[in-house]
Image (cartoon, rainbow, N blue to C red; front, side, top):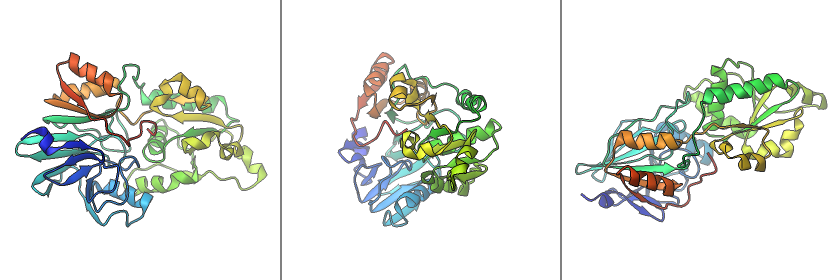
Length: 337
């Protein structure tokens, strides 16, 4: 069986002709396999959705219970037959419930990674290496400049700043799904047991994480009820959407110190553009070394690249004897990591 006969790129996303389903389609389709809950991969309006129970719960929280007509939750490693195609899900290590789609038929196996990372994350299952004929990878940080530092070191940098500036409120910009909960859990692991204050946009998904057994510790709403309460936030940590850290909303706190947690904080120009005083290089995507090491470990016959910096990864594959092709998929965000 030719690989293109099992999976192929289309304007709506990666399509499986024999199974008649898409993986993370960018538009509404009759049947979709969803790798994780970020909005650029998980959209409402599909006729049927196959995903992990966590991803389905995330989509319900974001879009409502009727986001699809038919929901088919599948735990990691639990296969389902879709029109003669075997579909199963393997951990991707990206966010809660994130999965690689493992597609098999007639002795051919293709693994579509979705978004993934390799380093430890206390909020989700770690990435699982699945041998395959074709590995479909992202390439968000596929440049050698992207070598993410140790996450613990970045969190300790944050805690040192809180200690150094006890009169200021550290307002951390972090995406509501995955990054916010990961930052909270790493803070807890470093011994920070004080309440962490949340922007209202963060509460729903933090509650969902706790429902699935991720103990985030004491969380409180980041609200100020009277003029004198502003100074009460001195020395406190607040987590908010990235857009809020330079918004009027952040100025309600005591001398707010803007922090942003993202792999893009490796780029100084982006730090300046966002007015960030304390950049934290914490990413939910694989860096250059993790991408290339993953490909070496899997040793696929072919490498397909969905989106991101595919030119550098294509060159690396050529130099390392790996047959590779870019899929040039559109509709997947590199910024919202």
